[in-house]
Amino acid sequence: MKPTVKDEMNGIIDRYIHVQELNELMKSFVAVRAESGTKWGGLVETSHRMLGGNCPQIERAAALAELIMLTLDIVDDLQDRDKLHKAWMTCPEPFTLNAVLGFQAAFAAEIGLLQQELGQASRLSIIEVNRLIALAVNGQQCDLSSDVHIQDEADYFAMVQHKSGSLIRLACYLGYSLAGDAAEQAAEQLNELASCLGVVAQIENDVNNLIQFDNQNDILQKKRTLPILHLLSYSEREFAPLMQFYGGTIGEEQFLQHKAGCLAFIRDSGCIEYAKVVQSFYYDRLEQLYESIPGVAPWKERFKETAFASFGIVQTV
Image (spheres, rainbow, N blue to C red):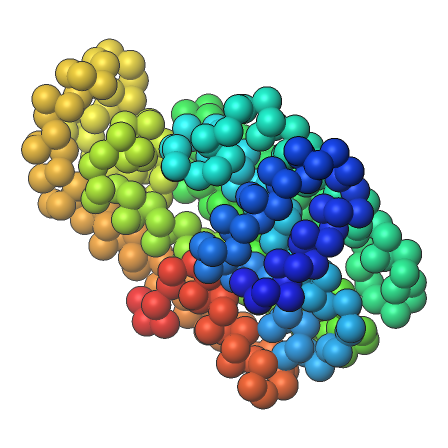
């Protein structure tokens, strides 16, 4: 994160949060975020500049993206009860919840103010921002209760498009909406690119999670990711304990007695290879879309570097 973007984030907090204790707490969360190497703000700026944008408020828009993503990540950590070392997990939970409300109120008010200031000079809309956030929240809910909402691959991809794709689209939108008429034609391509990027990144995350058999493993949480859906389709005849665990006929303690067998089933089932093949189709489409977008050098190359680095994607699959 650029120091100037961090300064913008703190400035937004100062404009709306006047109780010193809460103001300082929220800024401490921003400081932790700044040290993490987050690149959401970079995605906003590079998508803006590669399309020829030169809005003086682009770093303010980048700060808004970082505030939105920080808020959603805090909520995600509270839901998952992991990353217990983070500042928002070590302070009293009522304070963290109040900080979340403060962030939400601050970025919503600031987006509305920025929209008003720019007027017809941009296509920024608080309605569109809130729509994309709402899509991400819907996707997160489907992921949290995947046993109800994800029964097949179509459900999985719909969840990913909402949960991950909407947030990447939001970052790109905050960039291109301030780029004027030059971004009109590229907007649709960027939206599809963001959706593909979300799928590629989510599959990468799902595969990595599957082979790390710890307390946060997706199987132990009974999630239905792409490789797990593949496993479940063969489990009844090839590894019954997995189906029994998901069906509730055996508990986690009993299931963990079959850990070695489960790891062997994962290895031999081809679920990882299958997920990688599906990922490669989305990656190829991602590359096609990137090449088709008209962009200003060196910002187009920086956009790709930032987008891929943000989600841990290597440039070959």
